[in-house]
Image 1 (cartoon, rainbow, N blue to C red):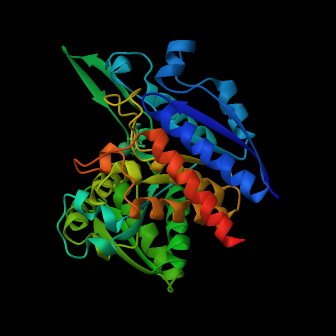
Image 2: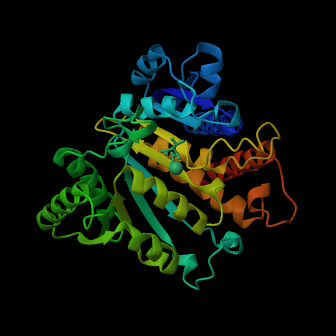
Length: 364
Ligand code: IPM
Ligand code: MN
């Protein structure tokens, strides 16, 4: 029996709708296996700005640090989009990532065969797409200073800084190598070594780690060429590792390959078991409050939480199997319905929970 305190940051838009369902699934799995999961909520993002004037409260971060894991919804929305606003919902998300030290963002991309039609790609090999992007999450352009807008010589100027240390690069590539070992043992390290100094350092570190880990095959790609290869031959990738901004861009591209952002989870891990789990999709303000969002990405994120933070792989697999099964049986929220009949967020979660219970009953 496991005991865990799980922090939940629902955030904005559809965040609260999908995290509610993920928590219901976790409670169900906890009951079925006799675990004790406790949940507590903390505000973040635009909702937190409205309530407290900041996108994250320092005491929230302290409480989350003492939890076993964090389930995160999504942040942002048009209400808080003014480019001159002093604080933005995204600041909350970035402060959580940095504050928890979760430097490796793991974004698995796979294609569900029944959803092949929803993918914009027509490659015959699409069904065999199965790769993981490991995105560096606490460095690079997102965090390095200077980062500001100022006025000089009659116009406004802006600067962002891309900075990486060897140890920052090394630790995230090591995560990728470790993951590759349990898969097809292939790492594609992605950089912009032909232009950027950080790219050249990245490549040097990657090449050294490749020599030190000869059991894993590593190749190196420039990010522009990787962006192209992802749509031309996505089935050839196993584990991709790259810096923060490139990872942000490539994972949105990777997500549409699979047909729907509504199906893809992510885990952000650091040097302890405390991880942060969030769907890849955003707050989707256009459909917020309608009860039609796809909860499966959040639910699959909760499966990753069970596996990576709580050490419960069998429980994680049960959820993942149940997702395979409900998709195979034709349950579709609007995003994956291809114009056909769609069910609500709650109905999808109910179907999933019934399937989890049935699969568990069949195991015993
Ligand atoms: C993501 C998102 C965030 C990012 C935004 C919301 C700050 O796009 O998780 O990919 O850029 O990292
Ligand atoms: Mn993104």
